[in-house]
Structures are given as C-alpha cells and as structure tokens.
Image (tube, rainbow, N blue to C red; front, top):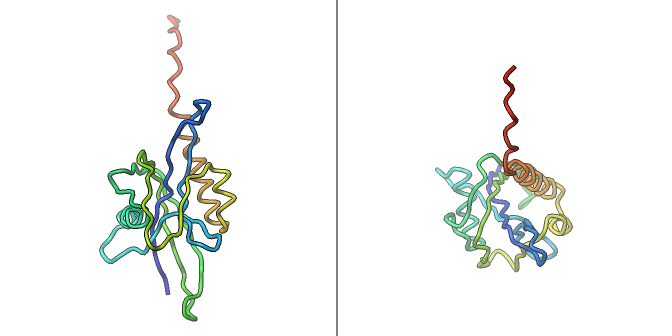
Length: 160
C-alpha cells in the first residue's frame, strides 16, 4: 500500500541579543522523544501544497495567510513502515515557508513544540531523512540570503 502526505518546514527570522538575525525552525513534539515537521495525508482532489497548508493550520494554528512559501523549494521523504501487519510505502512532500506570526496553537496530535536554531533542531530530529531535509532547507536559505546582497556598483565604462 502507498500513502502520500505533505507538510511544511516552517522557519522564522528573529534578532538575537547582539542584533544578529537568526533563523529558527518549528518542530512539533509527538512524545517519546519524537520531533518532526507538521504534515498529513493528501485528501482526494487536494493538491500537495493545499494539504501542507491545511495540515499546518490544523496542527499549529498557523494559517496559510501567515505563511510565505518558498516557491523554488520542495523535498521528498520516502520510507517504509508497518501498520496492522501491512507494509506501507510512505511518500511525504515537504515545502518550505516563512512566518512572521510564530504563535503556535497545539492540536491533539502533539504534546509540544519549539523554535530551534538549525544545529539544535538537528540534535532533536531522530530520523536521518528529516535531518537531511532540514539541512537542505537551511542550505537553500543561506544561498538565497547570499543572493539578496546589494549588487556591486557598476564598473567604469571603457571607451576602447
């Protein structure tokens, strides 16, 4: 059997005490040491990004209006697990989004949440695939940040 889900790696930017801007990622706590990103099953006639936004709102209280999806980022997690003696091949599509409204309202599915710097989040995530996806998101944001620098001043023209 195959299951397809979608979720969002959510981040926020905030200044630390020294005025440096830090990127923090939202992790949801499921209990028993398990942290992950908000996600859920794609429903009939629903597109993956719609599922990701719906599940995020249901699990965190962060609405689609409070998120800005990074259009050029999407990663896929694939794994196999057992449910009721049946093998399930799971595919999860993850998007990346920024929020400026980091207040979280927990759903019944979670026991807690936290906003973590990349290195701290890496320590909490148990599954290798989740760690890899978070690193990909962090690397993407660093690349995009380096592209947002002001352009170099124009070079003097030569009359030759």
